[in-house]
Every structure is written in structure tokens, then in C-alpha cells.
Image (cartoon, rainbow, N blue to C red; front, side, top):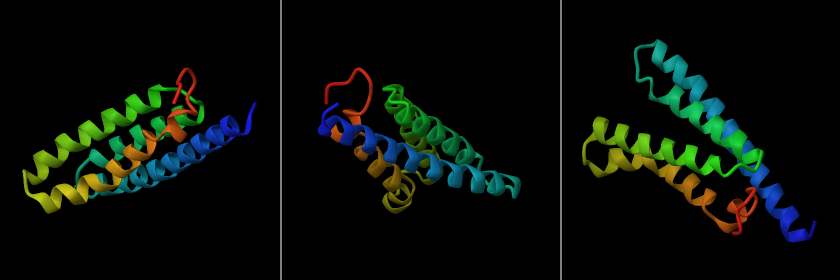
Length: 117
């Protein structure tokens, strides 16, 4: 295996671990928030982020699909909660959009099986 491929695989695993850690935090605190009477969006988002992270660590292209579902669901939830008001939408979407852009970089996509980045 050449150095470029090894670097891509390592970067894919690092981003996968990052998604898993964020998913654990979002999901765990989301369960607490839901039990206090808040929205149950966060445990679902945390679970989808966990699944995406595990798929990414296993070099499965389905990780991108799961994250796209998370991003689409977050957009719908954000519009339902905040309407078209810019700042509340930005606060709900900015982190996931940045993570989504990171997943689309050739370095992360190249780590997936069956992908030629």
C-alpha cells in the first residue's frame, strides 16, 4: 500500500472517530434533554452520526448516505423549529454542514471502498 492510500485510510478513520465521539455527546445529552421535556431530535441525530462514523471507520460509502439523511433531516427540523429566520437556522446547521463538507473532501472519500477520489 502506498503512502497516499495509507494517509487516506488513516484520515478516514480519524474522521470516523470524530463522528462517533460527537454522536455520543449529542445523543447522550439529547436523551437527557428529551427526558426533561425537550426535543427528541438530538438522540436521533446522535444515533445517525454514530452509524455514519462506524461506517466511515469500516470504509463503507454508505457513511455518506447516512450523513446526508442526517443533514436533510436536520434541515427539515430546523425549518420546522425556526422558520426562515437566518440566525436560528445557521445555529442549527453550521456544524453539520462543515462536517458534511469534510466528508466530501477527496482525502476522506478516497478512504472509502470502491471510491476513486
